[in-house]
Image (cartoon, rainbow, N blue to C red):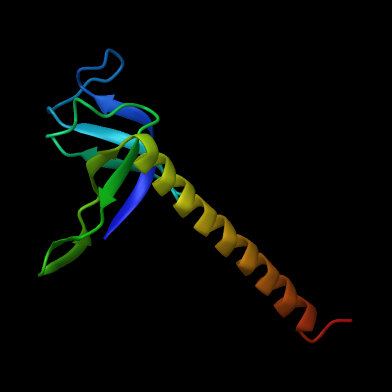
Length: 116
């Protein structure tokens, strides 16, 4: 399973305002569902990620015996693929939030009033 996100900030030891104990790169990522996380960037693409890029984050388990997600940025999407992917997920999230809000309003209005 993979989730799209948008790079907000890159954290690399090569940056002047980051001191690092290793050679890894992390990125602050706004996810399609409005969550914010910092993920490790795969070393094969670490030098290519930039703020504003749409990326895919690997949520597959680390191993069959360790059901913890990898949480690693493994792909950079560009052009129409990036735009289409980001917009599709954001639209899905917006539709679900509206549906959830309406459901909560309906439930609240149908709840018995105990203290009235």
